[in-house]
Length: 185
Ligand code: AMP
Image (cartoon, rainbow, N blue to C red; front, side, top):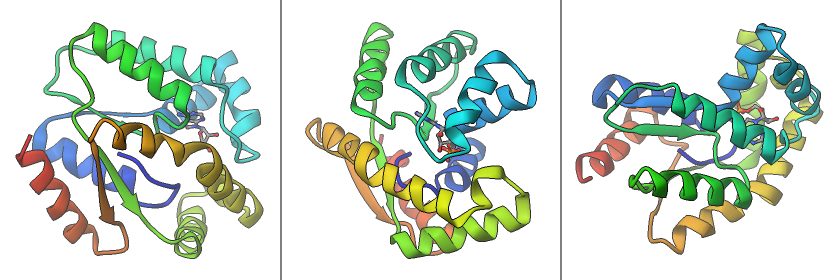
C-alpha cells in the first residue's frame, strides 16, 4: 500500500487482512510499539517521527527484516508505509527475491495535500497520535512524502506493478477497487 500520510493505507490494509487473510506490516506501527516499549530503537525513531522526518534507512530496514523473519507462513504480506525511499525499495526487492516472492502490486492511493492535512488533524484530535497534533509536523510529513517517497512509485512503475486509485472516494468504493485488483492476482 502506497500513498501519503492520511491517504487511508492503514484503513484499507485492515480490511484486506480480514477479507484475504494477509499479514499487515506497518513500519509506523512497529516504531510506535517500540516507543511504547521504551526500547532503544523506539527512542531513536521517536526523535525523527516527532519532527515528521523519516527514520534512517538502515534502522528501518533492519527492523523490517527482523519482523519478517519472526512471522509464520502466511498467504502474503501487505506492506504499509514501507518502502518509503529508493534504498528501502531496493532492500525489499532483494529480500523478497531471496524468498522467491516478488512484490505483486503497488496500490497507490491518491489524495490532495489539503485533504490529507484536514484528515490528519481530525485523526490527531480523535487519537492523540503525537505526529498528528501539529499542523507544522503534518505539512512536513506531506513535504517529505512528496520529496523522498514519491520516487518509489516510479521504481515500481518501471516494473509494471503500480496501480493508482482515487483515495478521495468512500472507504467502501476504494476497497471495492482494491478487491478487484487482489482478486485478479
Ligand atoms: P506512518 O505511521 O506510516 O505515518 O509513519 C509515522 C512515522 O514513522 C513517519 O513519519 C516516519 O517518521 C516513521 N516511519 C514509518 N515508516 C517509515 C519508513 N519506512 N521509513 C522511514 N521512516 C518511517
